[in-house]
Amino acid sequence: MSKQYTIQKFQTASMHYIELGKTELKKLTIDGNKRVKCRLNNTLVIHAAIMNTRDGIYYLMISSKNLKILKLKAGDKVAAILEIDKTEFQFDMPEELAEVLAKDENAAGIFSQLTDGNKRGLMALVNMVKSSNKKIERSLLIAEKLKLGIHSPQKIMKKPR
Image (tube, rainbow, N blue to C red; front, side, top):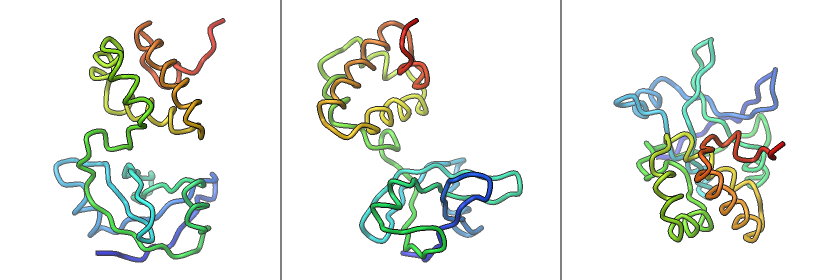
């Protein structure tokens, strides 16, 4: 069932979010779950992590890119349907990375042993670029770096000195 939320913005950062109430939080964090699938305005589905502040506010971040797609800004209302994310990676696997891993057994084996967070981070690195050719290039780079023992998304994109 859809619920209306107000898009908010942190004062100290340029991050936008929707705040979760206690009822939603209780339903979404069963068995320690922290990942959700969120359908916004019945048009855009995002995978998100339930985050919290020191003040005990629980929220889901919404990227500027997604706000632009939805044509929304801080203070606007958004309809959201939230559910526990039961997808394999709790993130959208880019086709290009899936294809590279399907053809490179060594890289695929290493990828399968990574933490869920590192897997999502590597998928995000591929999704950051727009063109399919750039996604293929980045996927190939990730596969090569994995085989060199570099598994952290932060280190994958660093140029060798």
